[in-house]
Amino acid sequence: MSAAGTVPEEQPATAVGEDIAATSPAATAAGGLARLLTAPRAVATETVHLGRDLVAIARGTDRIAPAEKDRRFADPAWRSNPAYRRVGQGYLAWAAALERLVDRYAAEGRDPREVARARFAVGALVSAAAPTNTLLGNPAALKRAVETGGGSVVRGTKALVHDVVHNRGLPAQTDRSAFVIGRDLALTPGAVVYRDDVIELIQYRPSTERVRERPLVVVPPMINRFHMLDLRPGRSFVEHAVAQGLQVFMISWRNPSRQHAHWDLDTYAERVRRAIAVARQVTGSPDVNTMGFCAGGIVLSTLLNHLAAVEDDTVHSAAFGVTLLDFSGAAPLNAFAGPRTVGLARRISRTRGVIPARTMGSAFTWMRPDDLVFGYLVNQWLMGEDPPAFDVLAWNADGTNLPAALHEQFLRIFAEHTLVRPGGETVLGTPVDLARITVPTYVTGAVTDHITPWTGCYRTTRMMSGPSTFVLSSSGHIQSLVNPPGNPRMSYWTGGEPGPDPADWRASAEEHTGSWWGHWAEWTTARSGDEVPAPAELGSENHPVLEAAPGSYVLDRDPA
Image (cartoon, rainbow, N blue to C red):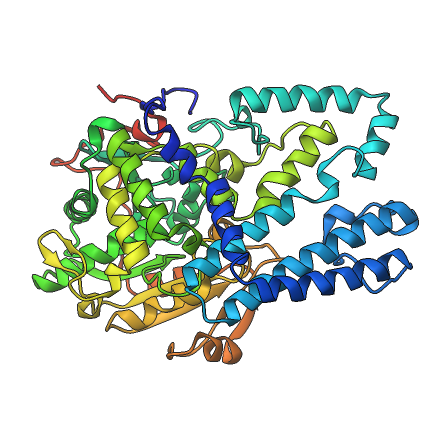
C-alpha cells in the first residue's frame, strides 16, 4: 500500500478457504510430486543411482560439488569441513536425482502441464530442503551468531515472528517504507488528462524542445502498478522515452475490488481504445504508436484485432514487452493449468469477486523459490539482516487485485489457448484472430524469464501478419524491462526477420552490450512522424489537466 492510500477490500476467507488451499503453490507442488510417483520404474532407477552416489560421498569423492555460482555453498566450510562437505554433497546428489526423475517423466511424452507441475514441485521441494535454510546447516549463519554474540539470532527470530504475523509466513523481500510513490518513485513530470472508473491517463511533460508528432500510448499490465515503468530517476523507462523526444501517454489502472468483479477483456480493451482517442485529441495526431507490457500486451492484442476488423487505422505500430500470447508451449505457468486447479481458481474468483494481489504474488514467488523465498529467509531469519531497500522489490510488493471476470478469461486463454485459436475469444464484439493484425510490431523476450519464456514471446512475431522485429534481452522478466542504458552487465540480441524456429534466429543473432531501450527508441522514433515544437501546456480544452502525475489510482486514492 502506498503511503497516501488505502488498499481496496480483499474479502476475508470464509467457505472458500479450502479452495484457496487447494490452489496454493503447496497444493500444486503436492500434486506434482504425486505425478512423479506414478512412474515406479524411473523412481527405482534413480533410487539406485542415488544410493551409489551416497556411498561415493561417504568414501570422500570430489565428483559431486556445488556450481560455482551457487551462493548457498559459498562459505569455505562447505569445502574444508568433512561433515559439511558430505552434507552438501548428499543434498546435491538427492536434488540431481529428483531433477533427472522429472526429465525421465517428460521424456515419456507426458502432458506438458503435468511435466510443468512436477518440475514446479521438485523445484520447491529441493529449494526448501537445502541445509543452508537452517541455522545448524548454515556455517555462515553460525559464524554470524558467534560474531554478534547471538544478536543475529535475536534479530532473525524477531523478523521470523513479524513475517509469520504480517507476511503470511514468508520472509519480507524488501523494506517497503524506503520508497513512496510520488516521493521516490513515479517522479517523471506529467499530469492526468483523462479519468474514468477504470483508468487514469497520464501525459508526460516533454523534456526536449521538439517532439515527434505521433504520440506513444503505453499499456502496462493490469495486475501491477504502472510505476514499474517509472521507477527512480535514471531507472525509468518513461523518463528515457520522453528524453528521446516522444510524446508519452501512460495508462494507470484502478485497483479493482469486489464491486468490480464484472470487469473483463471488453472493459480493459475499451479503456485502451479511449486512451488512444484522448492521446490523439490532445496531440492532434490522427494515429498513435502503442506499447503493451506483459498482460497489458494481451489486452492490446485484442484491441488491435478489433481495430483491424472494423478497418480503424488509429494505431500505427505496436510493441510488446515480454508478452506471452500463446501458452501452448513449455512454461512454468503450466504448473497451474491443470483442469482441477483451473476449476478451483475459477470458483475462488467468482466467490470473492477478485483474486487478491497476495494470492497471485505467492504463485509467482514460488516459481523462483531460491531467489524469492529462501535467499531472503537466510538473510533475514538466519543472518539477522534487514530487508533490502530496492525500488523493483518495493514495486513488486505493491500488487493489485484481478477481477473475477478477467481472471476467468485469463484462465481460459492460459489453459485452452483460446487467444491463438481464431474465434476462441471475442472482445469488443469481434472474434479474435491475431493474423488479421497488420501493423508493424516490435517484440521483446528475456533469456531467463521464468514467467513468459522468450521462445513463447518469440511466437508473437509469427501470429500477426505485419512486419515484425524481435529483440532478446539478457536477464529475467522484470530485470529485462527495468533496464536503463549504461549497464555493462546487460546485453541484448538483434537479428533478421523472425522465422519459424527461435533457436535458428538466436544462432544467427548479433549480441550487443547494454540495454534494448535504445534500439526500441530508434525503431519507435522512425515511426513517430516529423519533429514539431513541444507543447507548452499539457492536456487540451477537451481534456484539461485533472491533477499532477502520478495521479490517484496508483495510490488507491479516491480522486473525489
